[in-house]
Length: 145
Image (cartoon, rainbow, N blue to C red; front, top):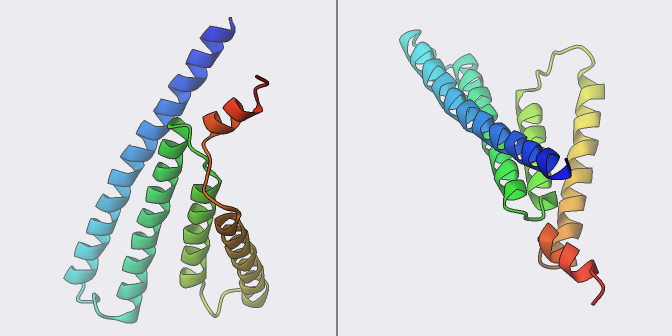
């Protein structure tokens, strides 16, 4: 029973990776559509056009980071650094597309800034801690000999 459950979980992991691959292709297509739409409207170099394209491009980068995280997990790697990188990219996207005149701008900006600083500090401390270890490597070391 446990073997069947383990196989099912592994299948779900691969389905997630496949879904993120499809999502990556869809985000590239969304960027291409936005690029063509802005070019046709002659808004490509206008501020609104640039923000639209930047938003679509940053969504693509977030999806790529999620895909990298899933692949690292499937390979048995330590995913903490990849999760932190994904968080940094996602937070950077939110900061870039945050509208100055939006309701509760100051509160949202402060919250995003605090999350960005906390994530950057965690990433820095993790980098100083030494080389990343795999989950399998840690499990092997914990086993009594």
